[in-house]
Structures are given as structure tokens and as C-alpha cells.
Amino acid sequence: MSANPTLAQWQLAQELRALRGDRKFNDVVKAMRAAASSLARWETPGDGGAVPGAGTIERLLQIYGATDQLDRLLELRKQAREPDQWQPYDLERSYRSYANIEAQATSLEMYQSQLIPGLAQTEDYARAVIEATRRPESDVERELQVRLTRQEILQRSDPPNVWMIVTEAALRQQIGGPWLMADQVRHLMDLAQGPRVTLQVLPFSAGAHAALTLTSFVVLRVDQHGLETVYLQGATQHQFLTNEENIAHYSSIFNRLRASALDEGKATSRVLEQVVRDLEREQD
Image (cartoon, rainbow, N blue to C red):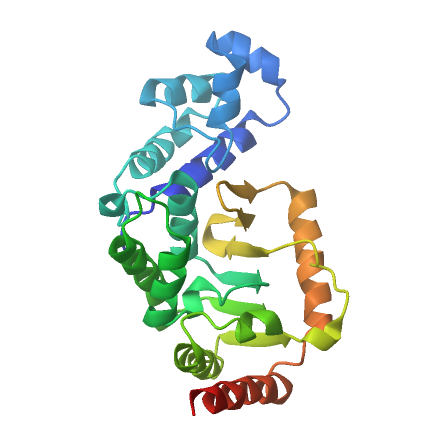
């Protein structure tokens, strides 16, 4: 598997925070003769964090009486500074972090109100979305290749458990025209037959629901790294939420959406089949 510096940095930050234990933050700052912001970033996983130098790690472990952990943490530091598979694509930092976490995710819970989730997009649908939303400096082919490469996790021998909740509005938004959209919905139907993909449609008839004010979100878990986070994607800014309260909040929203959406299986399949029939009629 390709190097995954995001997960290595995440684990390193968590372990440094755990090793500090009950020691007061400011006491460690004074002992290190470092800026408070530096210690905060060394202990912060994700985009707000930073990878400390080898000497810094050694000094921290001396303060914590944990020098026996040095070789292991230095190896994590090395991994956190290695290039990853996305380096040639020059991705925005948050998106790059997301792609790295997604690549080793154990489970993903995804809600989308306007689009088909990226992992489930056909090439033609993805291209149409990218072309419609591109910035002047965007490289459509590069962005498309990233999206298609991300989808490879669904084909690996141990794919993650993926639960998608997609609104009926997203299914009926004719991106690329009726023929392209019909092909996209049929692709969704095929994916939903997979053993680790669950798809629910949130129909118009659901009325008011728990995510009315949200466009989309993803709850990601990577069990082997003890990582759990919520990813929010905006037009100009993306955000990871890592504190337990926020994760619990979005997990609760997702569970309430599960209850509001159509049952996976026949109920969802009937809506998908009807959408395809409606789109096919428009092609005639």
C-alpha cells in the first residue's frame, strides 16, 4: 500500500498527547522552551497539526519518561514526512488529507443532498460535475483521475463498509442530461449489490429531516489507527471535526437520516428503478 503520511501524522499527534497524560500543558511548554502554539500543533491531528523534528520528539519523551518509545515514534515521524500517491496531483491540503484517510478507512457514512457521492460517480457524471464547478485554474482531467483513483478502494480485497444516504433530489438533478443520469443511477444500483455497500434514498416524502441545513458530510473511521472524524466539504473551505462531541452529533444526525430514509433493498430499489424509467422516457 502507498505511503500514508496523513494517518502517520494523525497517530503521532495522538500518541504525543497521550504520553503527556495529566501533565499541565504550560509546564511542558516551559520545559521544552517552545511556543505554546508549537506544542498544540504537535498534539493536533489533521490539517491543523505539524510534524515535530526528531530532536523535539526525543526531548518530549525525556520529559515524559518514555524514551523507550523513541524508535517507534521516530518511525511514525518518518512516515508522516513521506510523499503519498497524491503528490503528483497537487491537491488542496484538506482534500489530500481526506483522500488519504478514505484510502484506509474501515467505514464511511456519507450523506449527500445535491450530488451522487464521489465514490459512486461514473466517469461521465464526475466529468460533468467537475466541468460545471471548476475554477479557472482547474485541470479537469487531473481532478477526474483523482476521483477515479479514489474509487479503487471499493475494488480491493478488504473494502470498507460504505453506507450512503442520497436524496431523491440528487437522483433527479439531470447532470449531463437524461441519458447520462440514467447510466449513473443504474451504476448506483449495481454498487448497492456489493456486500459492503449500503444505499438508502431519502425521498421527497420524508419532509423535514435531521440534515435539512446540511449539504453533505462524511463520518470516517480507521479502526487500526483509532481514528474517527467528520469531514465537511464547502465551496471554498473544507473542515475536519475531531472532538467527541462533534463526532457524536454528526453520527446522531446520520442515524436519524437512516430512520427517515427508505429501507435499503426493495424500497430504495423501487425509487431508483422509477427514476431510471422516468429518465429513459425523456430520452425517447
